[in-house]
Length: 246
Length: 296
Image (cartoon, rainbow over all chains, first blue to last red; front, side, top):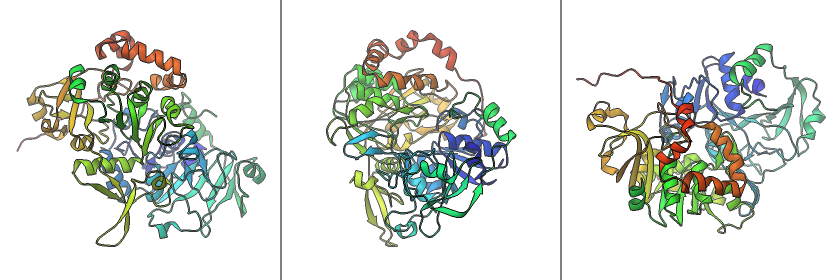
C-alpha cells in the first residue's frame, strides 16, 4: 500500500502529510521518483526532510533541516486555505461509497459505541487540498455504504456536489486499499473499482466493501512493489517496522 | 510551579496547556492534579496524555478539543471511558472542532474579536454535532462562511526553551498555536527549561514568541515537558507514549501511575530523580543554527 500510494505523487508537488502510512509513502516517493516533493505537516514543518521516520506528526526530526517552521494558524490559513496544497492524504476508521470519511464515532454522536479521535486537520484537508488520496485496508465494516458520521467530506451525499457547497478542492479522487484501487466516478462521485493488485480478483475487493461495487469496464493491474521500493521501505525508511506491520 | 498554579489556576477555570506534540507542559498538568483542582474546562487541540491524566484524576468537567488520540499509538482510554456509551452531558462534557477550528478560535480570542470566519465544514457532520459552529454571510461577496466563537481561556500554560525573569519567552521548533492561546488568555504561565538574562532575549528578538507584558508567572522547570519534548534539549519519549496504551486501558494501572509519578512526587525534580535513565536516554544532540547579523 505504501509503495502504491507513493506512486500517486508527482515530483515537485506540495503534499499535506498525515501520520502513519501516508508519511511512509511520502518519504518513499521522495527517495525514489519525486525528490522535489514538498512535505508540509500540520504541526508547522514546511519542506521537511526527516532523517528518521517520524513517529508522530510533531516529531522533532521534522524541524531539523526543514525549509520553514511556522505556527499552525499559518499552516491552515496561509498554506491550506490559501490553496497551496496539491495533495492531501487521509485515512479513517470508515470510508463510504462516496469517499466520506469517519474518524469521529462509531454509533451515534450523542452516545458513541466507540469514540475515535476526531477530525484533527482532516476535515479542512478534505475541503481544501486540490485532490485527496485515501489510504485504508479493505474490510466491510471499514467500508460501509454510508459512514456513521461525516468527519471529512467526500464526493457529496444525496447528490449535492462539492462545488455547489463551496469546496475548493476536488476531494477524494482515489482510495488506495490493500487489494486494489477505487476511483471516484467523475459524474456520480461514487467510488468504483479501477485497478487490482497482482493475484487479486474483483470479487476479493467486493468482499471487503459494504456496497455493490461498480467496476470500470477495463481494470488496470497494479504493479507489485519493486525491489528498490521494498529495500527502501524495509531497510531504510521503516527498519523498526513502525508502520509496516501487516 | 506550586505557587504559580496555586495563584493562577482556580476551580472552574478554562485551562489551556498548549503545545502541538512539542513543548507540552506535563509538569504543570501534574501540579494541577496534585492541587486537586476541580470542574476545569480543559481546552487544547490534542488533549494528549496530559489531559487523559487530568481527566482520570477528576480535574475536568468539560473537554474542548479537535483530535483526542495518542499520537502514533492509538487511543486515550481515560477520555474514551468518560464518553463511550454515555449520554451527552453525562460523564465528561465535550465540545469538538477540527484543528483549523480550534486555531481560529484562539486567533479570534487573541484579536479580541467575537468569532473567526473560515471556509470549512461544508458537507461534514461537525456543525450538527457542535451547534457553536455556525455560518455568516460575507458582507462583500454574499458567500456563506463557517464561523467559530472566540476562545478566551482563564489561564494558558506554555512551556518554552527559555525566558527572562520578566517573562519574555523564546521558543523554537514547532510553535503550534501557543502565541494565539497566550494572547487570548486572561492569565499566562510560562514554564521554561532555562531562565536567561534579558540581554540574551535582546540578542535574538525574532525568536521571542510571548512578550513579558502578557505573562503572569515564570516557572523554571527543566524537563517539565517530558514525555513531550523540547527541541534542542530532549527528545520525545515515544516509549512512554506507547506504554500509555497499556497503562490507560486499565483503570487500576492508571491509578497506580498517578500515585507513583504524580501524587508520589513533590515536583518535577522529584519526578526526574525517580527516573534517572530518562535524562541519559533522551538528551538532545547538538545541531546549532548559524547566527544572523542584527546590526544596522
